[in-house]
Structures are given as C-alpha cells and as structure tokens.
Image 1 (tube, helix red, strand yellow):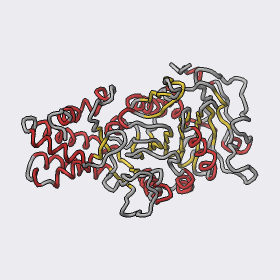
Image 2: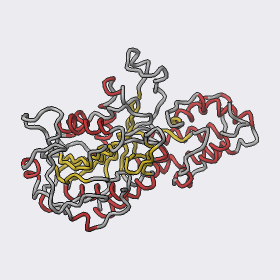
Image 3: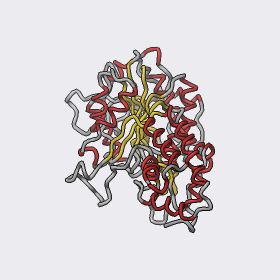
Image 4: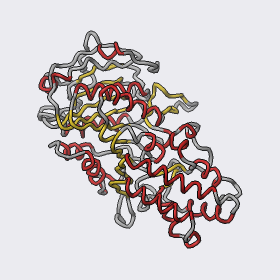
Length: 443
C-alpha cells in the first residue's frame, strides 16, 4: 500500500536514545537484528520518532542520506552505506544519518558510525534509530519532507547536506519506489518518480518547519544536473551537486567524500566544489562521467537568458534554412541519455558559427553561456583525450563538451509534466523546442 498521508501523530511513535553518545555505543545491529520499539508503527506510513534536539550537541555538519533503493538499485545503495559510509561514519564534527529503503527489506533509519574493528566488513552494524517499517513509499514528497525535518531537529548542525540516492530522470524528477510502481507484462516495473515540483514542495515544507534551508542537495542519481529541475529547486538548497549523464551503479564515492568532510571545517561552497573535484579521476569516472556543482542563486539569470535566446529562435519562424541549420548544430551538441543536450555547448556552437555573426541569436547565446559559467562553480567530465586508456563502456563515451547543465531537447514528446514546470512557465524554451522539432526543419 502506498503512503498517501502522514499525520503529526506518526512522528511521535518511536523513541530515540537521549544523546549521540548512547546512539553510537548502545547497540550494534544489521538489517536482520533491528531493535523494535513497542510503540513503532509498522505499515503504510513512516514513523520518525519524537524530537530530542535539546539533548544533542550541535555539530558542524549533518549529512542526511535518503536511500530510496526499493528498486533495482537496492544492492548498490545498501553497499554505499555498509561499505563506504560506515568506513568513516559520524564523529564529533559530523552526523551521518541514512534512511535506507531496500527492495523486499523494508525501510530502516541508521545513525551511521565507524566500525571499532570488531565487525565483519560489509555488515550493517550502525545503530538503528528508526526501526524497520514496511511499505514506505520513498517517492512520496511527505516522506522526504518528514525525514528532512526530523533529521534537522534531531541532529542539529551548522550546515546540512541532503543526498538523494535512487533513479533520476532529469526534468521528470527522481526517486523510484517499488511501492509506487506498475508491473509490466515482463514482470519488470515502471516506476513513478517524484516530480521536481513535489521535491521542491518537500524541501520548502521542511524549511518551514525547521527554519533551516538545506546547504547542499546532492543527487546520487542519473541525469539530475538538469536546467528545468534545478530551476524548480532553486529555492530548496543553496547548492546542487548532480550529473548531466546517467550514473553507473556504483555512483558516488561516499568514503572519500565523508573523509574530506570529517573535520567539519569546509563551508558549503567549498564542500560542493570538493565533491566534484574528488570524483574527477578515472577510478570514479567509470560511473560518474559527468558531475557538477551548481549555485542555485544563479538559476533566475539562466532562466532569463534562456528566455531571450528562445525568443530569438522563435523569431526565425519564417526562415527554414536558419531553423535547419540550428537543428544541425543541435544534432552535434553534447547529448545525454534522456534526449537532453548540454545548454552551454549548444549556445557555444551557435556563438562560434559564422552564419550567426553579429546576430541576435549569437548575442543571446553568449548571454546564456555567461549565465551558465556563473552558475557552475565546479565541473568534471570524462574525456577520451585526457583518458585515452580509460574505462569507456561505449564508443561515444566522451563528455569533453559537458559544461554542467543539460536542458530538455526531446525530438519526440516532452514529458506530460513538463508544461507544469516553473521553467516552462517562465521561459519560451518549450515553444522554441516545438518549432525546432517541426518535421519541416529537422535534419
């Protein structure tokens, strides 16, 4: 049964240890040895316990990991917690908390700790702070909002990072859950994702409850360095770290990331940059061919410049040759699996094309490029030139023209949710795209 609503009473059903010392030392357990609280509500809603914020020391950082693995990624997401997060764990400077929902395993929340050396590698030994519950739909925005609110209240800190680990779909959203899926004839599942609008709703609600805005939102998920989604979430977090392209199953390297944060001294902008730079080596680029850190305060300027650029395209409505040429450039632009293209690369090709010299198209394209350059504070991409003996899985795996933000460029039907996105409402990009997609002008 899917989660349709959560009541405030649900949030008081699980008791927590009184302080972090007890949390870290009182129990060791894996997913089969969860301590069940007699008051825990198990079923079609999630219970996240009472607040104990007055009993826990304030730390420098809290990392809230939203491990939505009730899908075919469950093995990878489980390993992220068992083998990587637990290699570093929480300490006197940082809290690491993981809400982990795995296929056929239920949903359990852990205060992630480092092993004392007596535990077997790969065992999930971190203390359970919310007992196992069944049928938790992680793609429900209320579940995400409640987890963030509960995490901020119970693990106070100067800075907060939320990492969403699941499937991603660009402008269609992210977070796939078996409990919200439709079984196909071949017994596989078609998952409904949380839309960007619902994700924004979750973050805004959490901020309203806690009075605290998220410093960094990380997407350990495919295709989420997306202009439309990032614009929707521009007021949800100060920085977003995500990939333009699909990710491999291994995804982020949490051990390295948390090691760098463990002294707690990095400020949000520095940490966002550090995450990207940390993974810019072949060891990680097999699974993270693109990764960028985005300053969300610059997204309004991106929307404004894309709108001007889109209007310049629409002004070419009577020029079939120009539209065909634009489509030729679009076909050569850095592209990604979800029929999106790199926004900067497309505009750069227009800006450098002699056909558009001193034109409004060139002028507006340059403005978009400048806005993207300001928004992207760190970017890494996999290049054949830099890694000629690298770990290419496909012959076209060269992302040297990936600059950090992709944008919808579907040549078929844009997702049914697209028109309701704020980016669609605030810009003419979808109208320009519809013009370019006219069969008279395609190449």
